[in-house]
Image (tube, rainbow, N blue to C red; front, side, top):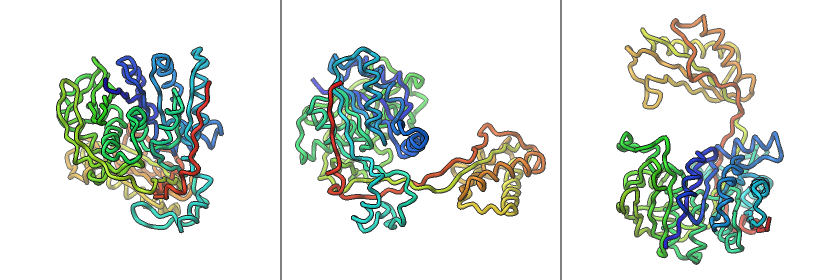
Length: 449
């Protein structure tokens, strides 16, 4: 019988209804991808306010759903630990105790948080280079956090030590889903073909409902039940070939087209899809209809993994704020453009010199470039800035009220987009760091409740 791995989460705050349906349909593992770069930034800010924070807070919600199934053999893997895996573990243990579960083995993967090692790594590498531009990072004092995208093998180790639940910090999205199959199939570290197939499976699963018809750009209007869209389930055979499906009776659609879209999502070179565990060749995969809401992914291959991990560093980048106003017919676009010029001049006179200004005319080409807009019923002007200080960013809101509410072009109304008060901004700096500098610090701890 094929191994069944269910996606319990594609992001922090994902719909717990979908998680519940996957468990009710019957899976061997529930795997949750709770993290993204923006998630880590918000989690970092939460931890600045409360040292007990630093993990995805809905890990307790997921645990409440998953832990009753542990007695039936379901195992949970989640990267919700983020910047505080031990805190996330304690949250899971707290749920277990509240549910009266007295037998539970919990594993934690530590070592992805590199924040305290940034200066050391910069010295050891001769400077942390931007993964895309090659630029060398300057002084590291303004780094907020640093996290390595670890691979699947520490999770495999925890499962091999009997963990019912494995909580990690930042690991690659694919690795969360790969690890259970790697463990169950007993894969060797150089089984590149089957590892490549599992990397593609992990990529298909990581965004939950995007593979089951969510965000589908094909005949999306024919996707049934988007309000109750099902989360994906992967059925994996001994050759690591995969069928993607979803819980019986759930909404959504699994078809070669929905799978193909997710296959190419956020992918640079599909012939070299880089993960910490293997380099997968997506172009070698064949997608075949395997019945209603079932797509077989067959024949994929992989090649040896690289010798480095992706590491993201977050640095302070100032403060942002945004103002928005709706201008109405006639001449909506002309009014919005004139309002933009008024704000430009008012901010200049106020001595505000933004690091960056971003202006959008929503309804008149905000996504694809400006349209003529001569007969549009309304246009929303969105004027956003990034400034060195909170006070400068706040000036956008002040000047909007002074200059535009009653003193600017006619026909202004409050926008449903609203305003965005000053918020701190972070810059994400991706870099590559040798695995030899990171792996010795990776630790797997497995303990009984």
